[in-house]
Amino acid sequence: MRKSKERIQLELKIQEKHDEAHNIAMHMVNEEFNGNLNAALSDASFVKKMQTAIKDVWQFYRLCYRTLEDLEKREGYRATHICANVLDKIAKHLPAGKNICYYPFSGVDFYWARIFDKVVCEDISFGKKELPNMWWDPETYGLERRKEIIVTLKAQKIIPKSASLEFVVGDAEADRASKQFNNSNTTLLIKGGHDFLGYVKSRFFAKKPLRYGAIITVTATNPLKDIEERLARDDYSRKASLEGTNWLIPYAMQLKDIHVFIKKF
Image 1 (cartoon, rainbow, N blue to C red):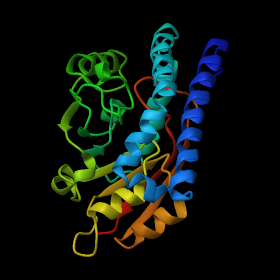
Image 2 (cartoon, rainbow, N blue to C red; image 1 turned 60 degrees about the horizontal axis):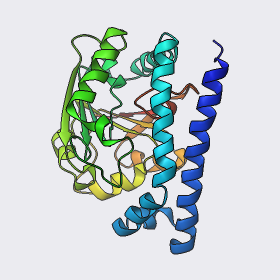
Image 3 (cartoon, rainbow, N blue to C red; image 1 turned 30 degrees about the vertical axis):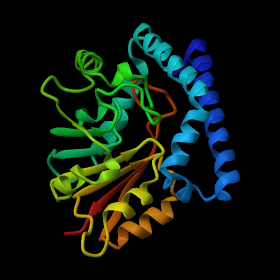
């Protein structure tokens, strides 16, 4: 399926702004932390300063995504349905029977309700005014906008009418909901360029092992080899890897570089 010229140009703008913001951020990391990204991300004051530095670039990025939302509607939700096909492929590699998905740092990426009985979305930005670490604009994190997105996805049959989504307003870094859902009936989803190993390190250790039935990583910042080595310590093995899709979709980061890990009980 070919992309329209309008989509190609818009996706290029989105990627350019993403890369511009990334380059600004990495220059700051190199200047202040000698390139040590993990140390930089662990410094809350630096993270806020970095987010302020890229604010103008990111505002344009958000605007482009709003334009993408309109284009997607005009093109009959083509990319959205391509994304749904990728989710169906992921589902085939998960443990038998649908279960709960715990999704920290979720933003408004509600597509995953397609393949789980329930998705618990945790984000510090739900219902808040402007925060320095907001991926989207404050309106998008509001109750009415979230409802609108869910209605659209149900109308397009991307997620079922019976889809269940729970919203946890909190800092996923504080390890609250993760304690509740760290069990064999839950799949942990870390998506959108997050530091997966940093997340695991801050929450799980020898006396508190990972117990999720499955773990999905999508576009993690860490090398796959390092993720595999860490998860092996808690008896996980990689069940599948999927390339995903290079189509951009509204409300979410790109769905690619996907890896599914299964717990050995």
